[in-house]
Structures are given as structure tokens and as C-alpha cells.
Image (cartoon, rainbow, N blue to C red; front, side):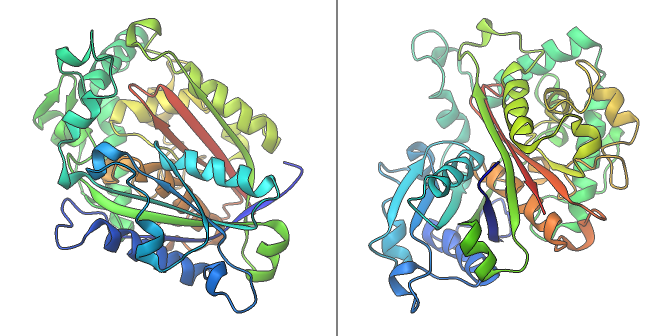
Length: 388
């Protein structure tokens, strides 16, 4: 990218099954306050030198929050007024994507992105059912889980992917999560534990899935090049971005492939000057709610050929210490709420490049990939490349 935008601060809450002791504003504020301290900035309307956050982008879905215009409370709760504000109804990576465009447009110097979801306050399955066609698919009871089960079956049958390979992705993620203080479910499990856990929707099992309920928030602060160089000595530069969406109806695409991710990744790689992602990317944080998705998404990202996600995992290339560690944080499988998931991927990637990932740090990380998706079976995909 010719012009530069940097991540200058991040903040996350601990992800938990139930934060009933905190209102959604409290959860969001906890992440935002950490990001403000991390970046060393405040809001423009209270900044003594006039340098501060000028715009707030939230990610939230009215159905999950339980009220319309779900993001309008944020300024009041933060005590920040007179700032531009908008809401992205989708995964957090899309809000980061739009924040980058906001800054590149020249309209804003510093933008705050905040994602907050309390899945404990609603019925996730009922909300997800609303994203399907109301005439043909909603009456069948579709949600993300049941649709993903269809995709898992198609993918495994088409390419000969074994249940053991999908289970290994879950084992790797939850073990990695033991080094992440924010993770909801860090577990020391093995393949047998996964395959003997309760079936949720065949072939997806309880330990092969993200936690059924997750609450939490993540905040990211981005800035223009000139401002970033003033406020931090550890800017993490956005090197490339790309997104793409596919057909909505599940029967209108081959669920065993992820063409929208291929397109989104290629757009991001082109901007970042990446031609061989497996060799040129040092660490990847990808959004995988189920074990099979990690395998399928690594194919879409070009880390391996189609149908080779299982072989890539089996080779150890995506493990800690491997050629391209995937989800050192544990990822979504270890517990992130919907919509917050992608924001957390960007935050974790930024921490890796700043050398601040603690016990989950990948050595000498210089280029990182963050990924998020939205819609049934990864209908819409977003890829962000970060670098030092």
C-alpha cells in the first residue's frame, strides 16, 4: 500500500461464558481503556493538543444486542462527544477494513474500532436463523452450526479429510490457548477427547467447536502514518486488505471450497506484495469456529493446495515452532464471541509483531495475517496483512 496506516494500540477483555455482572457498556469500556493506555492517546474532544481519536467504529448486530441502533450508546458511555461514529454489522475485521479506508481518505487521523458481543444475553441459534432466507431456509431451523455441519460433510467427502485431522486442529488451538490469558477455554486435550465428545451436528462435536456461549470485547486504535510516528515507537503497519462475498444460498456454491476467501486473500496479498504466503507470512490468526474450518481456510489463504489442509496440519507447519504458526492465541476455537472474533485476530497479530504476545510469541515475527468471516459457511471473507 502506497500510503500507510498503523495499528497503534489494542485492548481485550478476558473472554468468558457469562459476564452477567457487567453491562455491555462496561465490557466495551474495559477493552477500550486498555487500548487507550496501550496507544497513549485519548479522544480528540478532550485532548489538550487536539491529537486524539476522531471517529469510532463499532461492530454489533441489533439482534445480538437486543435493541435497535445498538451502537448509539457508545459516545455517551465513554464521555466522548462530537466524534464521527458508525456501526459495521458484521465481523470485526470489516470494521478494521473500513477504519483503514477512513484514514486513507484523509478525513481522519485516528480511528477507534471496538467490538462487543454478549452471546449470553440472547439465543445464538435464533439470531443466526435470521440470516437465512425467511421463506425457504428459516423454517428448516438453519443456524451457523447446522449449515457448517453441511459444509464439513461436503469438504471431508470431497477431499478425503478425516475426522482425526479436523480434531487435531481443535487440539492444537486449545493447547495454544493455555499461553493466552484472554482465552475462554484453554484445554489440554487429545484427538480421542474430541472424537468422544458430544455430537452437536454431525460431524461437528462439542470439543470441535467454539464454546457455545462467549462474552467479551476487543478494541483497536489505528492512525495515519504521520500521527503513528508521533505517538508510538512500535507502529504495526497495515500492508494489505481484501474482502469478498459469495452467493448467499448454500446450494449456489460448492461448500467444499472457499472461493470468496481465495479472492479476498489475493487482493490483500497483491497490495502487500506477497506471492508465496506460506513462505512470506510468519504468523496467522484466522477465524475458525470449527476444526474443519481451520483446514479449509488455510487452503483458501493459499498456504497449501485445495484438499491439502489436513496434510498441512499433519506436517506440523501450522504448529508453534512450525513454518507458519496458525492461531498461537488459540483462536476462536478457544473462545471469542461472534463479531469480536475478527477484531481479536487483528489484535493478536499486532501483539505478535510488537513482540508483546508473551508466552504465545512467535520468534522474529515480521509479517502477520489476520482473517475474519461473516455469513453462513464463510459467505463473506476478509483478510488483513500486517507488518513491521
